[in-house]
Image (cartoon, rainbow, N blue to C red):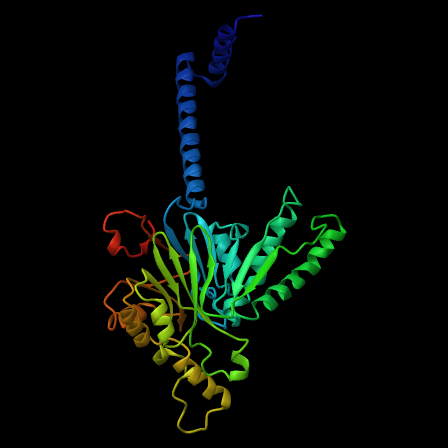
Length: 382
């Protein structure tokens, strides 16, 4: 057999003869083609790698605090561009979920957060726009336990909230257990159908949770102040203060002006608050009923509810000033359009930084001992 380089030379000479090229010209052309092809592959590959890197969920920081807004629309009506209220507080990489409106699970997926990594959930109150998305998160959590490599491994998800939270959690589990029971009958997992969810009803103000990362204090706010007394004994609405090594973050939940909330928020690094612009509400929900007709009982109740059990722009600014919080982060917008109006409005009554959140926006706090730690405030994550 001829040596390899001799065979290559003969093949090149034959190809050159058939194509009308001199052997040297053909070899040069082939070399250029190979070089061009290699460059093309390099460009396409680097672009693909860059695209993959951009689309890959970013790793959570080892240290520090992030506030990830998952839903910023005040419901219960649904909106195309914003999900219902839900926020993720991430402390040293450990996530805690606050409220769980419809769309929460989808936003978690879009943010690259696996719901089964969230082992602790807090519900401020059991209105539809703050609790109905819980079943989706629980179903996805149960799937992760159901198909884990070690079905016997103990894993629980703790859900804290006002009275009736246990009823909500148990009802949600009963709902998802039925279709997963079909999987179990087919030996597709869930052979034991053990409930991994543990509900904790909060029925008082004060310390409600503590671990090595956070300390959580609850205060009943004024969101249910117009409710009849016979219902308020078992229906409560809370604000939560989260103490972390990096600062204090207060989630107002839904509320009207509240001295208890102002006290809870005193000196907080971040006030994550709902906000309402009553003057911009649609005509069907105006605070000032049409003078030419008698408002229906529902319209009157809704008008009072918006006036007294939510936070108008001025009241939010006044409360932030009174509590001397270091920054205000708004969500749960009513209505949800033209959020710039909320920023300028609150700044008339509060001198600190004000942010109007969007779905999937992230805000960061620094690390202990950092420069100017005493004056640290949130800023959009870079």
